[in-house]
Image (cartoon, rainbow, N blue to C red; front, side, top):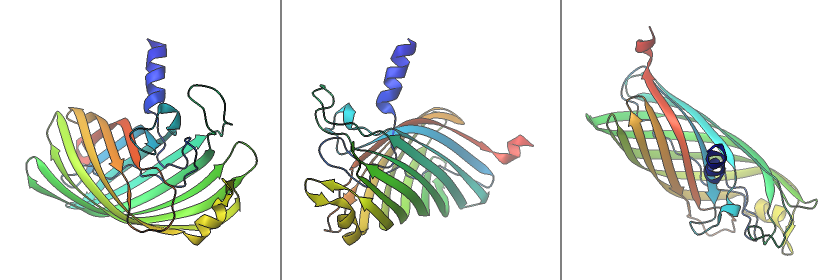
Length: 263
């Protein structure tokens, strides 16, 4: 049973930022979790933790998934106002191409960490429906590497607007979200040659991008404790060259309560 649980955990373990893809090409971006905490009134707090995966598309095999984690906390200091703080990280080792069934091409590795901050409003449309809107700013440091000596280092600032509609009951929560964001890479350094192209130079020339990212959230549990599943896709709105992962999925848990209940 312990081995079965460990195997399942490895399959749903995340990256929350797709830095790479093991199927032939390195990537420098992937969608991450989206804010929809379901705050209702002053003093509400929701804390969550998730393991997840960033992958090129839904047809990607398990070997292309990138491991990481995401944790965040949301708080309502006054009615109709919410504040969100989140942290994400991942680390993946580069692996040379081999004849292994799951690893026929080179696997690119890297390290990534991100902090994001959001401030916004929520409105309870009726006892079961909540509409939320947040302005989000994220800062990330990343390193992409191959199995030899090439490395690409960069910083990323991501600013965007998240809007979402959540159906909330004691046992189940279902939500849809959309995010419009602008990415800007800076401090791009290193040497990374792939298929004869200088990926460092490519990112320097195409360092700003606009993304549209719709998402879906499903939570199941009772009252303040729930298991959460989320899936987000990514659509690039500009035509500039940009290697990225397009699918993010996560599985985790969350706890929600109000501060007045702690007194």
